[in-house]
Length: 201
Image: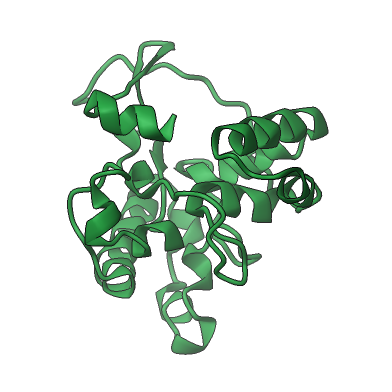
């Protein structure tokens, strides 16, 4: 299922009403690359153990959200989902077995859908490469990458072989930092110290 095929209606008029859908981002490999020397530049204030964060907190959080918002994705499947042999594939946005809910929406999946449009993929990749001072060869390689893999690279800053080509966006897990829905509008946010934000954008 592609999220692009689902009709979304943005209308958030209450912060205490019933939750109908939520935008989230799973802790990606970029978060695991935050080190003390880079934390401030990357707008992150703490060092986390990525595997512990995923297994002990994030996975439970996703199951809870799905249980209330999209129960068909999870009810009766907990044993299968959490089986060791499945290697957390249910929670990985770039995997075929990803839960792909239209109620618990993963930012990386949305980005992958957007990158499916060739024109947008070319422009967005060129823009990121210009900001990050990537060479033309890297830019062409990224443009030729599949939308699902490209979304992962743009967020984590790393290729599949773990080569970092630009800084990650570890604070993307704080999805409210990006924007807030007010009625049928989105308020885009930049909640950070000006010098640090200027380095990233």
